[in-house]
Image (cartoon, rainbow, N blue to C red; front, side, top):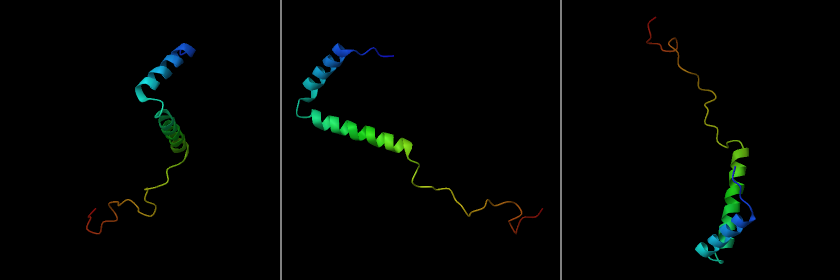
Length: 69
């Protein structure tokens, strides 16, 4: 898909160094790593909150005492 080779990666690293500076790179890398870990964890874990009603039944026309058939 994308033919990224070593020269392109080095050029990208130089541009990132110029834009953000060498002091910010560890923070950016750590934040990116945490984001990837959280994304993987959230995509594999089931939802923690289940909002599906369990004991409520759907009202039908025969449940209504004022309903005349």
